[in-house]
Length: 228
Ligand code: NI
Image (tube, rainbow, N blue to C red; front, side, top):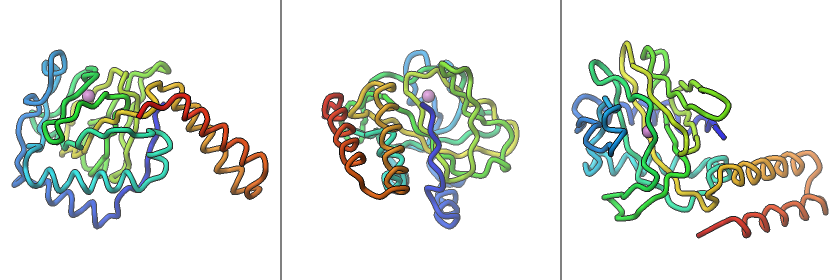
């Protein structure tokens, strides 16, 4: 499932984050953190993740996504890998087709995180740069994603994906991975659909015996499938 999370930040918050991510920020070659196959494809810049700036911005990203109920319902997060930041511009302008590592070790928390889902948060306006689409090769074919500043996309960690060359301007984004309580994308999808439709039924009819019973079904499925 590919899901868009909208308006995670106000325009003022976005302007402040972009200002923090200006040329003075500790940008380093993105290749320094890519493993194995991915390193041959990666040509971008990344914010030094141990910097004080990266740590402060990580908290802002986490706070914003965790405030969105859609994020919880779709991802059912168990562990979140500390958000990273990247910049595509000039000669460092793309990340060719690759698969992210299945299990990542966070230097920051010491944890290992299984990458069930990936999330990209777009931090600047699509009109500010040419190209730079996130292309996710899904079972339905290639999906090309280029979202307004402050929107994010959640997609399965199992997908082959790439960032197309940025031909003008710069593309700023944050990205991170989530280990879900529910490992299977299919099972998460069923739980998400059930949850969203229960929400709509409650809006239309209030709480009824049926919505209470179906909420029980939701939690019993979650209990059956969740690993925490
Ligand atoms: Ni990737």
